[in-house]
Image (cartoon, one colour):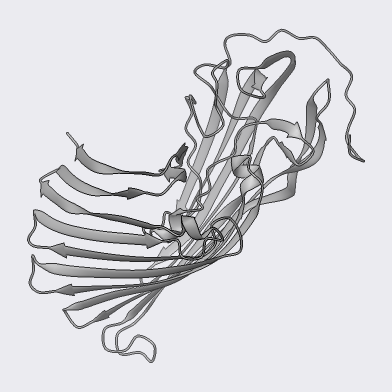
Length: 359
């Protein structure tokens, strides 16, 4: 037991099968200003500690607070969001194996970070941390606290920085930490966290993006991204990864329906699989058909045998609200996240067909 760890008297409690939750929300709008706040409370619930294990004597309530405020005007906007969560995971099956990466949850909580469309920026993706986990002194958590701020500014056409066609700049800063407090990892397990207090850092993503047009034909995007990712706290694996990512994207319009897009990326990483490079080419033949090819190259891997190319090429067809794509390629292994839902996958190669439609 580490110094400062709180010792809590053992009490045997039996948890209810039914867990209730209550919430309240308020919003305001005034001119160009807006804001909202939401508070949620969860009645006592059994803490799911490890795979397939429940303790009758480890039962705690939970709560969550979300606040958002922003200002929007022509050519300028700012939006700030903060959130604090403590023990806010609901499971469809408390006894299920897993439950580590948003598995078998019934209250999906999205991570409040920028959703990048770049390949390399999505290797180390943060997911929300609503659960309690007391494995050992190096891995204790009972939720999360943090937020993000977005700032957008458009330099007008004809200005010094805007030039002939103007310039759009976007800055996003996201920072997430565990809740500070005292944790007991020995029986009886328990915790007492501060309502406002930052513990160990989970993740940060600081990025800036420049969007620039050159006439009616060229559309370009340049971005820089700095990330911090604690694999131990987020994934349960050892290592802290710090990355610097740059990307350059250009789209050329041949006509109103035909265009080509080229994207180049590079990531410098301090640990894990180290440095990556990536390239993407996409050709839109018309409003319905497109061809694409991409390659992620892990050239910086410390293991020479693992310095692989993860290529993918194929075609997509769109009709109204339906999109069908077919591709062949190699899938990188590791933690793959889509919309905040993450899972571990093995490296693989094969043919993939995807159908997306709305109705």
